[in-house]
Amino acid sequence: MKTTKRLILAVLCISLIASMFAGCGSRASYVEEDLGAVPKDTYEINWVLYTAAEVPDAKAVERIEAKVNEYLKDKINATVNMTYFNAGQYAEKMNAKISANEYYDICFAASWMLSYKATAKLGAWVGLDDVVESTGKSRFETYMPGIYKEVSSIYENLRADDGNVYGVPVPKEFAENRGWAYRKDIADEMGLNPESWVHNSDYSRYKSFKLIKNDLLKVKAQYPEFVNPIDWDGQRTPTQFLGNAGGVAYLSMFEHLWRDNEDYKGKIVDMVTTPEYQECLEIARDFVSSGLIKGDVATATDFDDRVKAGKTFAYAEFLKPGKTAELKSTYKYDFGQIDVTPISLGATAGPGSMMTISRNSKNPVRCMRFLELFNTDEYLHNLIIFGEEGTDYKVVGKADNGVKVVDVIKKGGYTNSGNQWAMGNVFIDYVTTTEDPEKGSKLKEYNAKGIPAQNLGFSPDLESLKTYTDALKQIQGEYKLQLELGTTSKAQSEKLIAEMQERMEQNKKQEVWDELQKQFTEFCDANPQNFAE
Image (cartoon, rainbow, N blue to C red; front, top):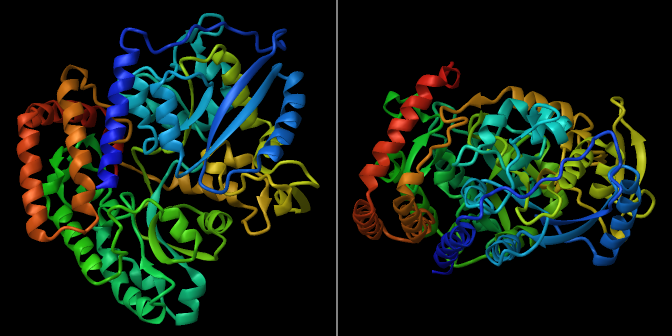
């Protein structure tokens, strides 16, 4: 399948990076700078950006770059060259750049994009926690003190598999929960009650898929030609509501399920053998056989395009306060949101959206100083997010809390509105007329409500077993979507799981499992705060 081939390609890309960077070290040569002085030499920062929305017009980007560069001259004497790739292109383009050892300075990375922790360990990005002699603090805290203050509570969760920090997280919501994003216009027109889709009795929130099914069948009957009742890809199937966390392949730990089942507390589990996982596969098969999922979901690559075209009624999504405003900015429809899973602080707290500095950067310190400015200077930040006042947006008022309220001018050709989560500090954003002016304070309250996952901050060191863990990850890539998309029968799934397990056993599955469990037990013993009720 095309999707499976892409996963295998991603694993091969990481393997190629490893072979290229072996022996090269993972840290560029730094030239320290005086934070109290403007450098005499000009440096051009090549910044590669991810956008889930439309790529801004090239001429408009040049216009904004000129404004940014004019402002930066007397601040840090740097210029910025911005290159955008949309969601469908980004992974392919950046994997190619990294594999070719191509020059750039800053790029977007995440736990789910470019495999932040694994790729960091392989040497693609510079480390940030070396101590600067003149300050006695890490480079992160020295050159990016404002960002550090915002993210210090989840700093330990930024560590890659080798124990070092390589990414600068976007200051935003670090807590997360999942639930339903749905077309509000259709739900209102049909008199549906999305509150009825929530399964609250325990942490088995994947059962919400069962609760939504009857309404999906009604939508299918009323909109047979124009709307997918529900849509998913590898990130939005029933298994995504399990709350499972990172391990190796399907050797994992459940972030929250242990709160209802002591069998999962402090334990690495073989996830495919658990009743919860098996039930998720059964739900997915039922949705496919009921005609609620498009027939070619296993090979389709146009999820975002389907939603933008108005073909999708509902899908599972990462949620937060104000998510619907972002969705409208990206997809142009009015969405509603219904929370399903608990608000948690887990593996994506920080690594869910980051900027990384390339090991090929000729001046990583200047890049750090730019990221600090972009994340702390309100004018610069909103220039890059919204563009020029009067051309790309107009100020329509000021909220009671002092935040500027703006309206995007579409003909300007430039905006990153709705994509701030993948760029920089959302707490200093202007807000659009469709957003809550209290967005920033509500996101901070949301973070405060986050329940620590039992693995918060856990980053296992499996370097001695790397040959086997790489093989296990590749095996996972070959089977994951075949199992979880619901396109294989129960008999086929059982056969695939048996085949996968046999191959994993041949690649030291038990040895890896035992080492993971040993390290996780030690971690749990040292972090009792993750288990506080």
